[in-house]
Structures are given as C-alpha cells and as structure tokens.
Image (cartoon, rainbow, N blue to C red; front, side):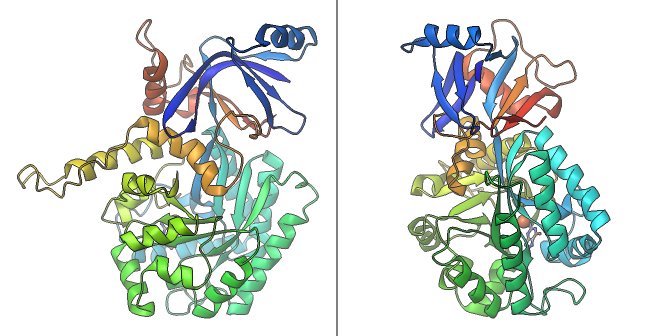
Length: 448
Ligand code: GUN
Ligand code: FE
C-alpha cells in the first residue's frame, strides 16, 4: 500500500528532514519500498496509480507521521513499580523492592497481567521497538515473547542471568552458572523457533544483569555464547558510584574493560547508563562498535551524575535512549527525550547556585537540543541495535506513529502561523502526550 503523509524524520544526525504530502510505499514485507516527495520524478504518476488501484491511504489534516520510537532499556517486570521507590539508592532499590517484585514472575498469571499491560502501554506511547530485560524465569520470559508477537511489538528479549550469591537473594537467582547459561540458551531457542516469529519481529538477547550480580563463570560463559554469533547482548555498565566501585574492587578495572575481557562487547551490545566512562572506555566501546543506552531519568535518581552524551556522540559512539522502566518513572520516550535535553543543559551550565558562575561543575559544550534527542529516540536506537528501523528511508521497516496535533485530550496546542517546520517538531517533542498518538504501525501492521 501507499501512505500519503506529511511529517518528520532524521536519517542523519546532521539534520531534521520534513516531508509534505510524501508517498510512502510499503511492500508486502512491511518494509518501505520508497519515499517520494512532490518534487521527485514520477510523483504524480505514482500517486494517481496508487489512488486508482484503491491502494492509497491518506493521513487526515493535522495528523503528522513520525518514525516509531526505540526504547533501548526496559525492565519489563518492573512496570508495576513505575514511579515507586525512587527515594532510595540503587543497592537498596534492588534488594528491597526490585528483586522481590521480579521474583513474583515465577507466577505466570502475574506475569501475563504485568507484561500484557506493559506492552499495550508502550505501544500506545509510540514505542515500536523495545529492548527488554525479563526475569530469571523461563516460562515468564517466553510469555513476554508470545505477548510481543501477539500484539505486534518489535522486541529484543533477554532472560536475566544473575547467579552471584553475594548480591542476589537465595529466592531470586540462577542456581548456578550452568543454570544461567542454559536458561539463556533455552530462551534463544524458543524465540528462534517460534511459529509466529518467521519474520523475526522478536530477537533473543544475552542478558547478564550487571557484573555485581554475576559470577565470573557466568560472565565468561555468556561471553563465549556471544562470541562469533549474531546475538545481541545487554547489560548495565558504570551506572553509579557504588556499582562502579564494586567492579573496580572485584576486577581491578572499569566495567567496560571487564565486560570486554569477558567477550561481552560487540556490534550488537547495548550498555545501559555508562555514566562513568573513562576516555579509554569510550575508545573501547567505539572500537567494538557497541552502543550506549542513555537513560537520563533513571540516571538522575541512581547515578548522581550526568552521562556526557555529547562527548560520546562526538567520539562516534552509537547511542540511543532508554526509559529504564522502572529506574526511570516514565514509560514514554517523549519524556526521556525531554529529560535528555534538560540534563544536558545542567551538565553544560553547572548546577550549584552557591558557586560562582563558571565553577559550578560546568562542562561547556555538552548541551544537546530536541533534534539530537529525536535522533537518539529514532535512528540512533536503530543503529545501536543494528536493525533497519528509526526513519523512513527505503529498506527500513515501516514502524511509525501518527501524531494527531489536534486531539482534544492531547497536550499539543497549535496556533495558526506559529507552528512551521522544525518549530512544529520541537513543539511535538516537548508537548506530545499519549492522547496525541492516534495510530501506531510496526512492520506495516497497525497495532494501535
Ligand atoms: N542494575 C542492576 N539491575 C538494575 C535494574 O534493574 N535497574 C537499574 N536501573 N539498574 C540496575
Ligand atoms: Fe536498568
């Protein structure tokens, strides 16, 4: 089919592209065959041909098309505690709240309810691709894959590996390195052989939770599994002072260095947070073509520092955005975009009003703007995952949102003559709410 639409995308970090009355031809495989603008050759002929064949769909006036958004860091089981327990440090948050909640996913009925509501909410918020941590449990992790396939969300899912008795409670940990490895392999096999996954909407992910939660045997076994495979890997890296110091004390090197020694850094590795990277760590991540999931909201609660995003981008690292549900209190990538811009301004200007200007921890040149944030949530996320998603160039999956700028219950307010071009996109990035998301497509299928 062909969609006649106006909207925005950002195939390159260098600039926003606006299109008006463009024809987006979507193949039977759910991928974009071509995006044709009115000034391109053959536009009128194509438009007429699609119309006469009854294969032309139009977005109504006031409705704009954006690429589907990509969340690089979601803890699916933590959705029930979204907005809770953000007043305690990471280690307390994990042991007092998070591990007990996650252990409840041994109960499949609980998992079905939680995962069903989460996937529905993320799709309605415009998240068309999510990189998920599940729990240690095999049946519930399989169920998350089933639900994503059924609802039509592009997803990458890992059974969480965590077996270190020093940190993980008896009631919620893999019984041994062998159990962690077998559970990981089981989920990979299940997702790859799933009868409804012929189009590979869902991918398996090797998921050592983070170094403190894993024994060296498990880290080594998962590194071997990743080596030479096309599997994705996800973990947390240099997230907080406590976490960072723990790894330094245990392995004598930074998280990045340690993960690299275990073979866990590759083209399809996504490192959440990565707030405390050294210059050498950034070089290593870049050399391995690995990616960082920037989680501005959760970093504000658990890192006590701001990820120097602009420095990472300028070094050429792959970076996308994550909500880190429930370390961050929002399910929407629009909120993550706003958070990314805001914290970048704070690290740039410094924040302590009692210090004279210029000495408040300023890190000049670290600002980003809404364009960078929009890039991270779309094309940046696609590149991080090595998947053809994030914009409307030919060959990409048609993953998209229709933003109704006039939805009465939505938060966008347009004014005649004020909202043109990039100003309009900026307004959408800053004010869009769930009620403005009128339709969502994944792989050409309308899912909302
Ligand atoms: N570090 C280890 N596990 C977690 C988690 O679930 N959330 C966050 N934010 N950090 C972690
Ligand atoms: Fe996390």
